[in-house]
Structure formats: structure tokens, C-alpha cells
Image 1 (cartoon, rainbow, N blue to C red):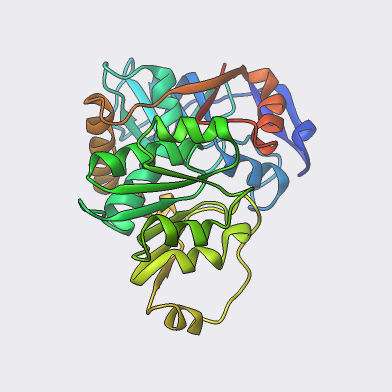
Image 2 (tube, rainbow, N blue to C red):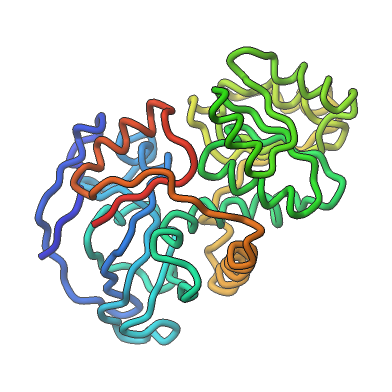
Length: 324
């Protein structure tokens, strides 16, 4: 037996119940992991509320770090006692221990703590595919990052700056603006006070951006398109303000032959060799100190509902974790 957060019916944070649950033995291709730290991400809210479909009852969470306790038949790339971290599958990590597919696990370098490992996998691999696979930024590019003080935002800002980009970020408060500036953001826009598209035009002297990375959704579209130079890329990777409404694709032509895409992490890491390459890239920039992953808040696993209230209230910054 172990303890886990269980959602029996979609709903608010109060729908997450801390319960004792049974845990079996790993089958073929599976691993038994004992968590040391569990990452918290906005996608967990989507599964809790039912915005993203999941079989009920469901244990939220798609990110964690811990130790391998047992392995099933056919598992060769990790062994009992290994320190491991993972992002995906999309739910199941809000638990002290779990049985999970070995395919998703990577070995965690000794130089990276369990807390940092749990906090960085989903957000860090997301930053990796945005910057290195969706639109491969290069020195001299101008990047607009929405929610620059969020978990993904802080990583993208640091990494893009490290790669030689000019980074513009939107934030909701002065404190978040200071945080974004401390993490590689060259220019901060306070979206509650300013027209962000007009400010981007002003900051860039009309040259606009090569790429917009947008995890906000409804509230920032279509104005994000007005921030792009001709042939620029709009990369939507989340919808914390609600999904983007259907739009006429001709809008992309009208605004400068733009590109628009809606990638997901799980498509990128579906192949084992790609996951290994992406994780290696992430571990390298974190290990070198070029990208710092800072845990800004932690809650006991049993208090996951409080963590979700803080997350949905937009009172958090950076990486958040649960401690089993």
C-alpha cells in the first residue's frame, strides 16, 4: 500500500483526496518508483477539472523524481537503486510510490537533486522542444515569452538568452517582472497595464519578433500574431486562460505569411532516442549553470489542494513541487 491523491469526480482543488491505495508489482516494461519529489504543472489542473480527459478515478501529475525500487521483465536501461526522473505519462505522479512505464524514465545525474529533477523535467523538456525543435532559435533572434515568470517561462528566458537571443517577456506584476529580468529577460511588459503588442512594436522599433511562445491561450490571441515579423512563428503550448477559439487560417496570411503550431511534449518524447537526446540537452544546460532551476514553493503531498489553489490563483512563480 501507498498514499496518493485521488480524483473521483472532476472538480475544484477540493476534489483531490489523499487516500491509501494499493500498489502491485511492475509488469513487463514497467518500473516501481519511490518518489522523492513530485513536480506540479498547470496541466495537472486540466486533468483534475476534466478539461483533459482521463479515466476516473485518476491520480494527477506527470512529473517526478525518485529511486527505482523494482523493475519488470525486459527493462534494461534502468536498474534497482538508480536515481531517475521523468515527464509523462500525463497523470499518476501525485503519489508516494507508483508503477509506471520504464520508457518514460531517464537516469538523473548525481549533480542534479531530486527536487530540481522533479521540478524541471516537464517544464525543462517543454523549453527544450520549444527552443530547439519547434522554432530553433539562433543568436540575434528576438523572442516573446508570455508568462515569463512562470515555470516554463523562467527556463525559456534563461535558455534563449544563453543562445544569444533578445528576450521580451510578459508578466502580471512588478515582482514577477523583477524575477523575469533576473532570469534573462531583456524587456518586461506588464500585460495588465500595457498593450503588449504595441509595446513589442515599440521595444523592437517596428522590427517585431521571430517567435512567440504562448502558454496563455485565449487572452493573448490573436494579439500575439501582431508581435511577429513576416514568416514569424506562433507556438502555442498551453491555454491557462482558456483555449484559443477557432480562427480563419487566412489570418496568418494577412499578418505576414506567419506560421502557427500547437505542439505537445508527449509527441516529441514518444521515441526513446528523442527523449534521451532532449534530456541530455536539458541536463547539459542545467549542469553548466546556464539555466538555473529554482524551486519557489513546496507542499506536502497531502496538501496538494492548497498547491492547486495557489497555482490557479496566479500567485506562484517558477517551479513548484510536492514532497511525499
